[in-house]
Image (cartoon, rainbow, N blue to C red; front, side, top):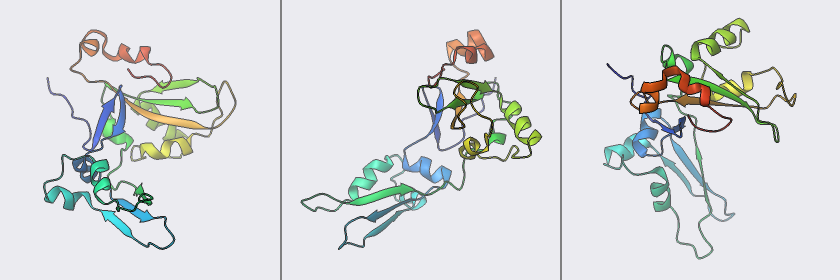
Length: 190
């Protein structure tokens, strides 16, 4: 049995896909990190290119470790603010077509609301195509903005979307298979 690997640059924490924090993961996502100083008398700008850092043998370090190396030694602390540029290799729905171990969880972000739904990737793509707002190339990060229907419970339209990934090598998957997703809770892992 062959196992489809997780898309490069991503990891599964508690069953939910998250961007991995190593420099090699940033390079796989083609995602640069930029910093700018907030101090009025400093105009320092920093761009961390993960591919270049990997070329210097730093791919296994976490990006936070490299950011600390660029901090200044001011007594009142460094005021360098960091932000991630959008990934040039983002998660797209078509990366998960045909994978039984992947689901899309759409959950309401309304205060105190616990409403959520779990969809197969193919169902999500079909719904986007039916409404003519997306297709398989749709980026997962863009999905919350495409959800226009209000929550069935609180009537708000504030959605969060997560990719649920269950390793096919776990005993739970071997015993339950796709029924593993029946146990998924709001915000909880699988």
